Length: 81
Image (cartoon, rainbow, N blue to C red; front, side, top):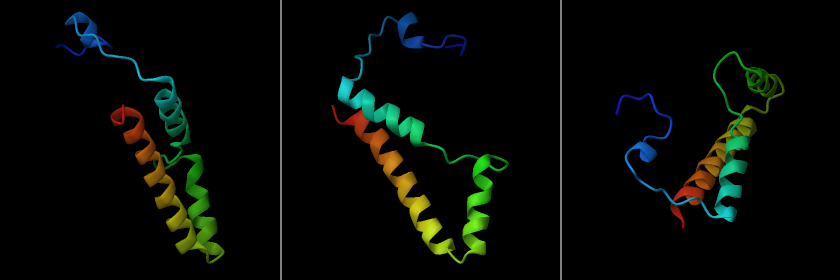
């Protein structure tokens, strides 16, 4: 594989089954909910505001739970069918 093809499975004659609609919906929602980015993005401000207001522990708890739910959604969408 030279990395030049977006879908190498087609060039090798592999046919991958499509995700069922209900799993595809979960995958798309989890993908769109993944708004946690890298430094320099819009979400740099909320941690600082939470810190200023004394809400840092709650912010960290909610952020960790959001990330966990996104990952669980992706795992379910891909592996549970």
